Length: 290
Image 1 (cartoon, helix red, strand yellow):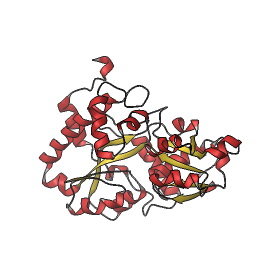
Image 2 (spheres, one colour):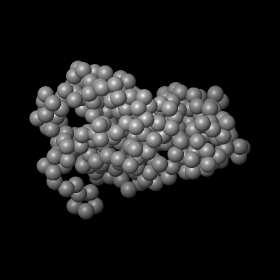
Image 3 (cartoon, one colour):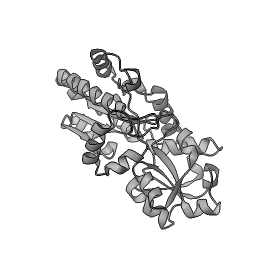
Image 4 (spheres, one colour):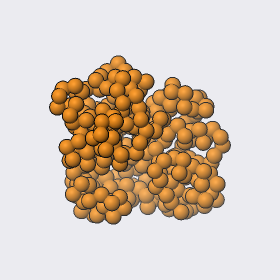
């Protein structure tokens, strides 16, 4: 059984008990706290990351405030209400990375926690002046004339590891063969997806005609929207950005959100399945070099 859930809390417990074998989620503080409690779950492959210079996460600003010149940069968010997903998540780390570039931290803004689907309405009714919003909600807000995307969004946090593939420890120990076969299939899919992502960070690559209809069916977004948004990257070998993950851990620790601030990443990762699957499939060749 596999599940792509909305938050770590949706799947960590069933992964630990063996009721769920595979999940996909952001590596949030809740995940590391579960590891500290002894819940048996491991990060096993990349599920999503920011493409350098083409982030699928955005800092959106109320268009009225942008047009008036009141908010034109991250520095202008000091002391203002900003929509985020939750207190300690990868979107929070993304927001903090942008604030640090102008000498601020996440403590310098007033965050409110709502889902991405609610961000456009919150911007429109003025309950927040900005939001940290992934696609496709960012494009939806811009299309509706509600928001403007801050240009610095693309370079705030290059290669951030926004989500990971998770295996339950029981799945690893009790059915390693199935776990390996799943990983081979997963990396095949990751490579097809990578073939669909063009140099502009959108689904304009050679495999887009194959991938876009599947994503439309699974997400409910229209094919038109999917072809216009900037998408997340996925490493075709399943490799994760360890440096980025460790940066997020330091962010969670500094915020006081970890039960064990000294958590070791080595206790949370098992890359053996991805490395073996990558070796079985052979080197990945981007479409332009084939």
